Image 1 (cartoon, rainbow, N blue to C red):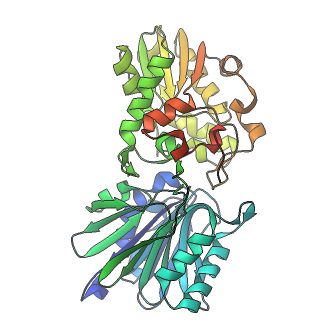
Image 2 (cartoon, one colour; image 1 turned 60 degrees about the vertical axis):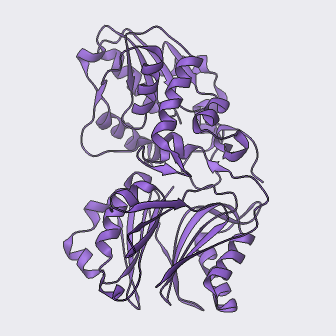
Image 3 (cartoon, rainbow, N blue to C red; image 1 turned 90 degrees about the horizontal axis):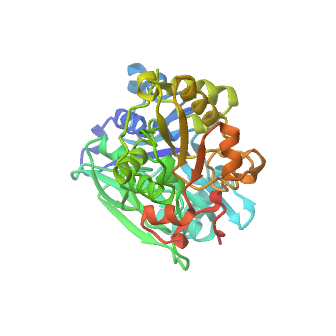
Length: 431
């Protein structure tokens, strides 16, 4: 689930912009989408690229940012080690960054390098980046969004025909245009959010305009439902739907579906806090701050090893004893993958004196891996793949345990199930 951003200046004198710092701040707002690799690409009649392992603010200092000359730029964060932007030298020189997974056919994998090479060949053939991109997106299946910077100072961005991965457009007056995975990256740059890129739509940036065109789309959208549960920041708006409001509604639905008597509601920081707010509001059970975090924000669901996930959870979740001691608690979390970190959390709460811990999860149970690049383990490692809710409660040490249903998730998002990608929850098929 990489985070991508592109920034493009318009008009006369645009060569005076030094864009690397803008990309840097945009990437800080996308850091939650990938913490293993960060990369900045700039262009000033040639490409400059720095790709580093680790976090954005650790990788890029003043000296490095100053070395990235260029007035057009791309940025990329990824949860995958050794990931990087794709650069193609011929027949047309370009750089591509992407989120998700392009497929040449229904079941045939297409790497991002292959995608970039196909795009380069097509641009060379038709001599029009917009037409070339339309043809490629029309022929490539899968779930993806991408941004391409081309040597003739044109930037192209687009989404697959079902719109699985998000892509949002913003601007800073008439001076800068930007496109990013989430609106939060536009907000931190002081930009106005203009619109979301539609499924199958291509956006072309040139020195004096933005042009839009779309491939023929026969099917309904299939927006990634996990974006609203976990992947996106709560201050983002994805596909014109505010993420924070979705998460509050999830908490309200959990309260209605699975009521329980308790003394306090606590949410696992930070994603599940809005869920807990909604649950508390719907039930009248007081909302408490149950945990204090230590160190940097660590997204344990996308850490690459069991050890790192466990250490991350211990850093992230230190229970406040006086807030939980002697109480019956409703513990709200966003999702459960293997159950290892949840078991550790429940154990820590009871170690600090909680009498009972009733777990409510703001998403359905994972049934399968994601075919479009979200880093989920194989089905035999997913705790919800084979165990019932009662069995999971016993495994994690909870006094009760319930997942949100798929229908309630769709209702929380405000879309019918056939407008969402629900494959990881075992819902529906992707055509």
